[in-house]
Figure 1 (cartoon, rainbow, N blue to C red):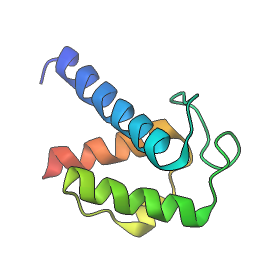
Figure 2 (cartoon, rainbow, N blue to C red; figure 1 turned 90 degrees about the horizontal axis):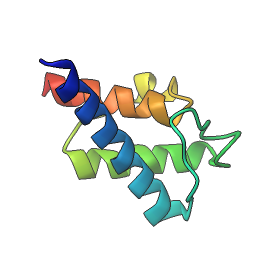
Figure 3 (cartoon, one colour; figure 1 turned 45 degrees about the vertical axis):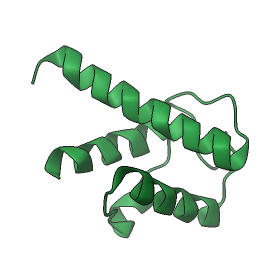
Figure 4 (cartoon, one colour; figure 1 turned 135 degrees about the horizontal axis):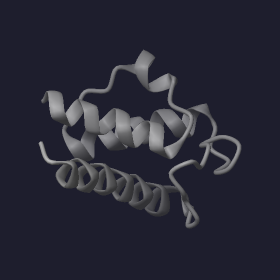
Length: 87
């Protein structure tokens, strides 16, 4: 896969996560390195809800143990994109 397509797919996933955060939590200022808990103020329940929303939106099955290791928006974007590639 050409590098341009990989970058576009990762950027698309990041933008979709930003939309979810804005629509469901009213969070506007999101960067790839934003930490869900420290920077965005989300708690564990919020993160589980975010996983559920992402599963529904992207038609993916998220492994809860792998998802728990994500701390930043980039982490979850990369993880979800890797699931899409496998699907």
